[in-house]
Image (cartoon, rainbow, N blue to C red; front, side, top):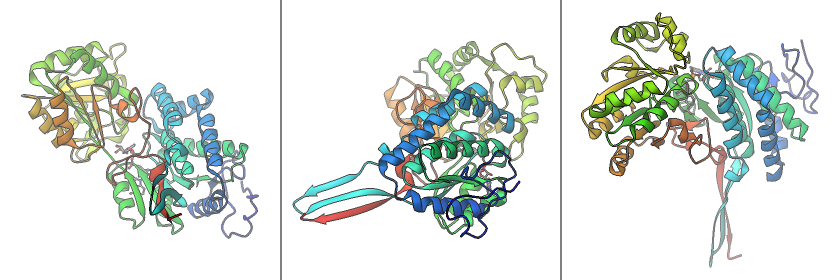
Length: 459
Ligand code: NAD
């Protein structure tokens, strides 16, 4: 089906009339047949958006929050994300979307800096980049679109999304809902656009488009390398392999329950989720016992070997098993899952593929260390220099301090589950784009804006 765009500039722009196969798509929904058309529309939208006031921007952010927080929408996104990607847990995805909509800061994040004195008044304010190209992952497809849309629009940009092809249908539906919600509150059309058929080729076209001033990639190493080599301003949020260290001085019962909660959240898909546990030898048995009483199942060596053959390839996890539940993994190795099982644990050495690779499955290998300093040293090694996320359980403030200094991760959670680091059950705002490689850390509106200084002399 061919639809005709009714925006005033449509006829004047060659290649701008989108052919949209989805019969539900209306003009202004932001869905275009080609990446060039999606960028053109976002560029034209930006020319109009640049005249919006801060109050308008905040109103648009509020409209995004309201649209995404409708229980029917949250339910739809959670169930469809699991259905389309084949990964994750519906209840946890519901929560992640809710937190993305509630806890991502809007225009309040753009705080003007100023100096005043005998020489006058100098301010530093934030200016939009223009059109941002945002590449989103399959593991948090809708959460990233919510979070990036709020931040990027709050900072005065328009955004073209390149969703993961495995989450294409839902991402397109979501972009449509966002544009409709924005139109209802008087926003310009096409503040958020995407293509009708997301693909790697479309993503490459987005990266290469000269009208795209900034690239934001949330994903694995290949896309991080690609945007960083693009020659454009890039924010790259890449992979992690978060270790959790458990010291002899930890509250073990609390540590075990936090680790099971964090490592099983959304079937371990989050980049921040605990991926391997390093436990001081003297408390490792007690820790495992508490984990089992909190919904973990300990694999014996034969089961561990079977699971390894199933889910590991020489280069990393087998994508077929990424994001599956603990029960599904157990059934696949012919073990009847105990009621309420959330996480599989097993003892391994540090070289084991479960430890070395970012598995993104509810499988937590446990490696023993002689003492807390050996555990910290091993955690630094296993984090592979991503500088992403680390977790530690200890009541020894000195040991916590030593780990923080040694590992230097963007997020360091102490005595809580990993997701406390993104404001879920911990203080602070939320984000689903954690930019370690380019150094912005937990991104918010201010990272999607240029800093502009203005000096009034002796005014
Ligand atoms: P992925 O790298 O396979 O895909 C991410 C996006 O990049 C997708 O839109 C994909 O289509 C695109 N892409 C990938 N390779 C490309 C290439 N060569 N050329 C053009 N486009 C390309 O990642 P995924 O499996 O969807 O997500 C999981 C990965 O993302 C994990 O490594 C996880 O740690 C990471 N992640 C990081 C953060 C963070 O904030 N740091 C958040 C979520 C996920």
